[in-house]
Image 1 (spheres, rainbow, N blue to C red):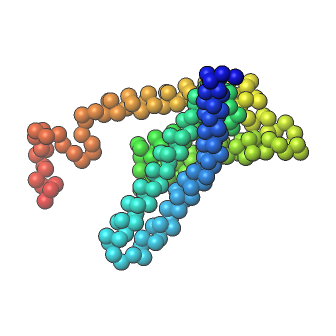
Image 2: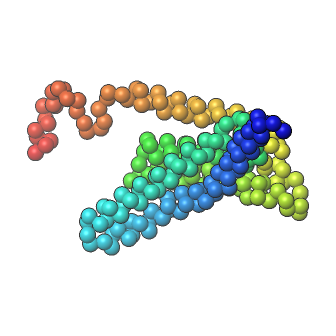
Image 3: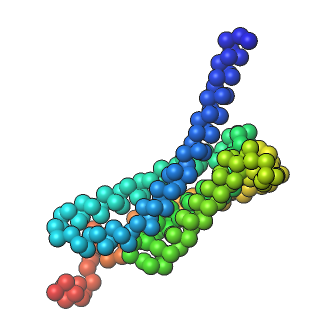
Length: 217
């Protein structure tokens, strides 16, 4: 083996090890994401007991920052499952690309609506978050982590992308199409709203309505 072969082996081996390490860490991130999301009622009850307004604001902003930041980190790391060269060559959970798309939909719900104030948006966001986590954690546990459990039969092999390519390929391409379509529609929506005032806002230089002083009073 010459130096080029050794470098290629180290590169491919290191990339595979990194992807598998991320796949193994993601269930922990999913667990923290779900825990922080469903801890919202507890956080609100705790805030109602605080007598210092500034302390309550700092506590709430810290909670929202960590909760939403962890969601974005989980989504960013999950996008590796949409890469064909990794998903089809490294043994990964077979429904991981679908989980990434559903997590993107949950993020879109949070961007377009306010789950903290809208009960319907909170329920929809919760359902999407639970569905996305189940689509990833179930094949991760019963596929990759249980591959050496003989009593499960062919179940682990059917839940890994490289050993069930007949199902993995359509899952990947459908997930890629849905991911691109969702991002494209979101981008188009923001382009259409570009320059338009939000609800309750006025454009600089635009005359105020005749009843504006009365409403302000």
